Length: 211
Image 1: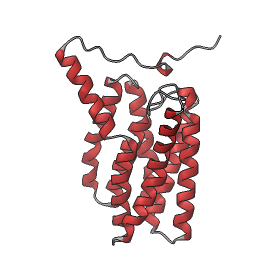
Image 2: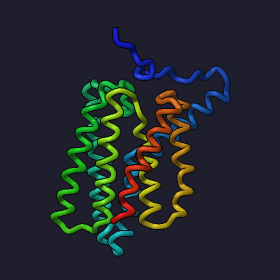
Image 3: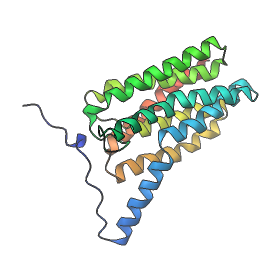
């Protein structure tokens, strides 16, 4: 009989028997909701688009990237949630996550094609391809282990912003650390799963530096 991965089962909410525990849970929930992938991708892609285009047109390309990489997948998750397929956006069951990754890959692929046809700046296209490569990695790992998508996106956005603007943006990895903490505090992921997601997001963003 194959082993059941306990980390694929819905997490047991942190107990709120003490005021401090309840505050920790509320803080973690606020952090994970505020810094969810679609929000970070909106900020990151707009910033990368502006940096690589050098004028306001970069904001339009960045918005396209954010829609394709973040908002379309988030909309798909919301649609499936309303149909009763998933409890919430976190999709805690690893075995049900594959369709999301395929939607992300297709959406980023279409967005990248539009960028190529529209002669978008090379930097924003490179960022899209980095996110596409990251999603391939997430999909591959997810077949055997529930790696953290939130941590991967938070890491990728920081790495891409540092490459597009200034190394000082690497200090924003404190934000990535906050995302990782919230995922562990809410018991959606283990520490190892958030560390792996952070590493994958950073590694797949390195290609941006060569554009």
